[in-house]
Structure formats: structure tokens, C-alpha cells
Amino acid sequence: MGEFKVHRVRFFDYMPTAIRAMAFNAHTERLALARMDGSVEIFNFTDHYFQEKVIPGKDSRSTESLCWVGGRLFSAGLNGEITEYDLENLRPKYSLEAYGGPIWTIISNTQGTQLAIGCEDGTVKLFEVLEEHIQFERNLDRQKGRIISLSWHPSGTHIAAGMMDMIRVFDVPTGHAVQRLLVDRGFGGSKSQETVVWSVAFLSDHTVVSGDSAGKVQVWDGHTGTLVKTHLVTKWDVLALSVSKDESSVVAGTSEGTVIQFQFIAPTLHQQQDKEWVRTRTFKNHTHDVRALAEIETAIVSGGMDTHLVVRPLLEKFDEKSHASGLRKIHFPHRNLVSCAKKAGLLLFQFPGQLELWRLGDSDGHGENHTHTHTHGLTLTFSSPGSRQPIHLMTTSVDGKWLAAANSDCEIRVYNLQKLKLHCIVPVYGSCPSAMGIHPTTNNMTVVHADQQLFEYSIVEKQYTDWSRKLQKQGLHNVWLDRDTPVTHVTFNPKNPNQVVLHDMHMFCIIDQSLPLPDQKTQFYNQMTLRSLSEQERPSHLHAFKICKTFQDLLCVSLLDDQSLVVVERPLLAITSQLPAPVRQKKFAT
Image (tube, rainbow, N blue to C red; front, top):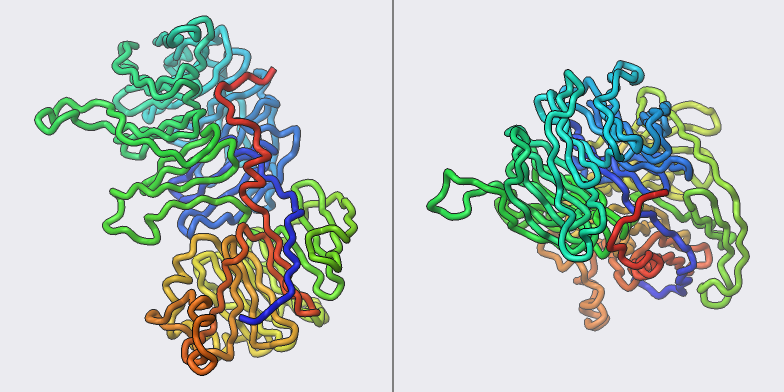
């Protein structure tokens, strides 16, 4: 791979905030996720869970709940407002004061014609979904005490509402409460504390499932209001519930960081007619509160205080163990947060509300000899003619002639900056570009996609290069394709035009186009083997993909003009150490 002087940088204090809510759109297979800072992220589950859009947050916009209606996304929060998002310009489209105090939850009916919100003042408010906005319709019977959680019966005729110490079932046409389900306060000393029904789920057969602050998941008959079964699953809170599409499975998230699955099955082989809700599995992939859950067709998706998104595939949904059935944890944004000025030796760090500029030190690159300035940043979304989707990637050529821009429709347009006009459109490939760079001497553009495919495109000739065609004909090595974090940065070796440098979260790679491409029989991670071989044996084992895994939790890898390597790491342990101690009992915002 070669010897490099390394600037190992660990002073980028990037700190993601807790995941507060999520909503999965089964029709488009998009997951929307809201964080404590009010930002919203959208992941495309048909494209390797790629984070295709981010809407920046505001301190005043505290999101408690998210809801899809068709392709439209709504949120509600403790500021008492409902917000609809503009998913093309990546900003709130409008916000509406609901006049019910803090809003704890927002849901829609399956028909997509109405929204319901649960408010601090004890009202469930209905809004009509119109083409361009929403309109207040009416309140259901006002209750004494805040409405914490809601679930709409699939028929649209009833709504279950979780409150303090009880669940109310409302008849939607009349607005009247028709059932009152009283929830036990728990055991021992906790009997003096009110029980918060954090989550409810209303199933087609009128079963109501609830999760509460006394650690219980309870199953109720919604017709009669009677308790069918109690599962005590934690000493702390059950914070979230999610139901599978076929209603055969319910998952519950707890303050202990566990996700517990219940399935509607017969207790024994001989009692096939007598199905009941049975606790079947416990997953532990979080250290803190699991605040948000979605059970989708093939996986359980969870998030919470520890900031990372977990996708846990359900193995019974897969015929064989494969890359698709592996556990995924998404820790970092799927975009570049660090820019490097190669000649000046400067690093620019992007935070949610500011930019920091640092100068690399002459000593050991650990940040002793540098200056930094705070620059308050702005958000500008660029639009691209021909597509209404936002641009998420841009790169320019060193000579200042070319600008390439990619959008979430997977389109890449190249502009001539001297003539200020469109030069060409790169043939569309069906996975979102995650990183791209333009070569400083050839002006060939290297593009890597969310599915790990890699292309090289000649901007001058408006076609793929011979090397790229050869790579696509042979196919990329399976070990490369099975990586589970996207490449977020492409750069080049200023002293060797054959070398492309790129990285994901777990490794960086120098692709040497002068060397043969590895086939499937080739040992892909071969650096250790090469070190053990003699000078004579080595050439026959060389291939184009030189992988280094010495550094971890990578946010940037770049080669400076002086041939030194800049490696910016953000150790996950450093993020974990800054989290509050695991919160066992949720306190209300006052």
C-alpha cells in the first residue's frame, strides 16, 4: 500500500442527538426518523438503507411523533404545533398551532383522509387532510388528563387513546368515549405513581395492546373493555410498540434498551385453535431507552437515546443466511461532514448549527498546533432542472471548469462552469450516489453508489472509461459488495494519477488502476499476506483494491499534497461516553 505520514485527527467532536420518533411508509419503503434536535432524516429501505434526505432541526421544534399520509410527512411536538414537511426543498412546508397545549402523538387513519393528535389538555383533535394543507375538523370528547398515545382502528371507526392510569376507546363518528380500560399501577412502591400508557396499538379484531411506565405490555378486548393478558417485561418503562402488517407480531421497546417480540400463536401444537399473544424473543441492541420502533416486513427497526438506528432482520423471513439478513447499525450520517484543503492543510468540520475551521499541526496531527474558528452555517438547497428532488452531493474539478451534482432520483448532472450551462447527464444507475470526485488531471469522475457499485465516467468524452467498463464486466468482489456502510468520500493521490482514495466508516481503500482487478477467487483483504511474502512472490498476489482497516469510525480520509494522510476518526466510545446515564424512568416535560 505504501508508507504515509499520518495526521490522526480525533478532535472533531461530532455528537448525534437521540432518536425520538420514527414512521415507516410501507408503500414507498421510506423510514422517517426524528431526533431530539428537531432534525428529520429519511432512509430508503429499497436502496441499502441509504439516508437520502436530511431536514435540519430547530431548537424550538421538538418532535414527539411522526406520521406518513401517502407520500406526505407530518410531525407534532411539545411546542403544540403540527408541521408538514416539504420533502423536495428539505424544510418545513408550514406549521399549524393546534391550541391544545403540548402534542404527544400524531396518527392518521388508514384511508389517509384524517389526522388525529393527542394533546396535553385532554383533547383528541381531528384534522382533515386536504391537497395542500390540513384543516381542523373537531374534538372528540374531552378527557381529564393528557392524551399520551393514540392508535386508529384499521376500519377508521374507533380510536384507542393511552392516558394516565387508563385507555379510552372513542367512537369517531359520534366523538364519544365508549370504553374505559383501567391500567394497574404496578407493584410495591410504584403503586403511588400514576401509570403512563406510553403506547397503544388497535388491531383489526378490536384487540388493544398497551405498553406502560410500570413495565407492562397488556392485551385487552376492545369490545368489552376487559383485560385478556398481562406481560410484565421490565422493571422500568415500556416506551414504544409496533405491529407487523399482518398483525401476527407486536414488538415493544423498553427503557432498558431491550426490544421484546410477542407473536399471536397457539401455545402448544395440540391447541392450534386457541391462539394467544406469547412473548417469543428479546433483542438487546441498545444501551439506553428505545423510544422508537417499526416492525417492517423483514426486520425490526429501532432507535432511541443511544443515537444509532438498528435494523435487525427477522431470520425466519430469509431462506438462507446472507448479507441481507445481517444486523445493521447506522451510526453516522451517509454524507461527508469533513472537507480537507490539500495544499493549505485545513480541515472544515460541519456541525448542525456551525462550521469549524482547523489547521493541521506540524507535529503529530493530534491537534496541538492548530487554530480554529466558529462560523455559523446556513442551509441552501439547490434544485436541478428536470428533477424536483433535492441535490445531496456536489463536487468540482480542481481546474474550476466542471461541477457535478447528484440528486436523490439517482441523477448526476455535469455543468460547465465557464459557460454556465449543462454539459451532460450521466446515465442513470438505480442506486443513489453516496460519494463522487473528479480526477485532478484526467477530469474523469469516480462515482460510488449506496449499493457499493463503482463507476468511472469521462466528463470530456461523455462516456464510461475503459477501466470502468472492464470493472463492470468482471464484477466487483463479493467482499466489497457485502460491506454495510456506504462510501462517503472520494479523493485522489496528487502524485499518482492511477490511485483513487475512498473510505466508508470502517476502512479506507486505495484503488490502483494500474493493477489487475480481483476476481471472486482472489483473497480480497490481502495486505497482511503481502507483508509475509518475499519481493519476488509479491507481484503475483497484488490487485487493484488496497484496503486498510487500521483506523475505525472514520469521518474522513484524504491525501494532502505533501503525501501525508489525514485520517479523521470519531470513536463510537467517545460518543457513548458523552451520553447521559441510561434513563430508567421517563419524566414529563414541565
